Length: 547
Image (tube, rainbow, N blue to C red; front, side, top):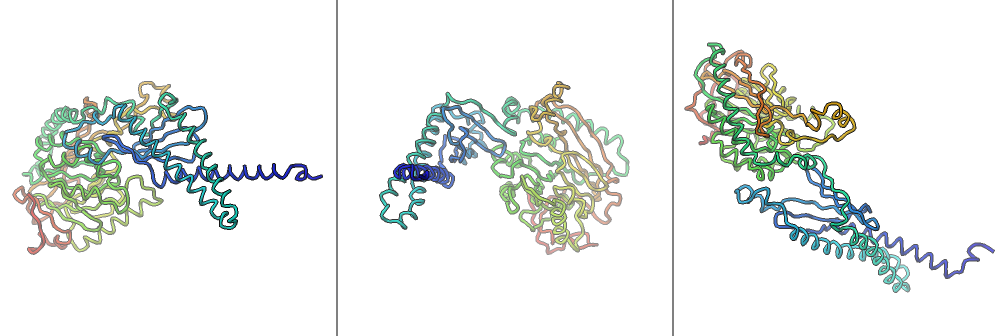
């Protein structure tokens, strides 16, 4: 007698139906998961909002990913519960409150009652969406079977109901028993968020620390002025037509109180910024940190080219559009391929944006930078090179001509190579570089044990900026370079002050030109500039004079 003959037919049929229902329950579970991912549940507190979805994993973990790191909360329960993911962000209306000063960062933390209400509302909506998706998926899965065997329609309804009940009872019950505040087993933050957790005090009142640092930097400025007057050659000690403050790689830190102090004490005519104003390429970051208001408060033109941290995609121009609304900002490439020529007191300036964006991956950055430089060169073909040419990346900067110097940032370290000036970071690379970073690798832990004095330090770069002086003959007089550390902690540390003779950067001064403060600021399309050999733009050029 065979095995099938020994097992009663009813038992075989029952086992087959049991397996079918179990498989259908898995399908229903996946359908519920997919439903919450396609239509996530939206929940919010007064200042925050989140889109929550169920994940196809049984790890009893809630993940809250952000661009600056993830928050991961693990729970312990009687049985594993499906994972949850919540995309959290600050609500749009909070941006205006922060910028206007009617809200402090400390006010953003929700109280327990508000947080519990938002969580309860979110859990209820997740439950019914998951149930609807599970039931719909199981019905669809059995629809084909019912069409081919219409006599079994009743069985289809029963099987769908049982499968959906199993899909809900198992994961739903596990979630109900697991996701409770008294069952949290681990709270973990990654990336920058982990650093913030151990350095909360450093976030307090950054504007005040910038004001404190301004006093320190003013002393350095006075020292450098005395040295410059004593030691610069008489040939370059001509009346100044323009003084430019050169900055780069601000990376989201509002250090404009310090910049205002430098502008006031040094008689700066315009600020030149070679990009990476932000960290994550989103204009909202500048709103939250007050950067746009800080730029407007400077009271002088702010000439800008975009860096690779100032966009989120190849075509994203959100940061540029927001900067265009700041009255004193001059964008040298306000939109892709549209180049502008600015003149400050007769000193001509042009430049082009970085083609890279935040978190980009590429096999050949060099080719991209070469292509960007080629586009700019073609736009300027037949024109007299402007005195200053700006871009963010060094590779591109070394591939375009300039009447005097090219300026770029990106490397966070000051350097000079012939007439190519590399700017350091005005904020030392941004707030990220100011934190104490815990040892994250085995090598880092071993190094910390060997040298406790350096344990947890994230090596940053000096804060640095330059002042470029141009004489009335439109030639570079001098480049004064400043470097210092620890401004964010309120305890600045002197690093370096140096002065570069303008003749090193520009050996051959231009002929037949005159620059002066009476000329002010003009902005026009790059194509309206003078042809090679000419000294001034054509009389009919479309020139806009700005206040």
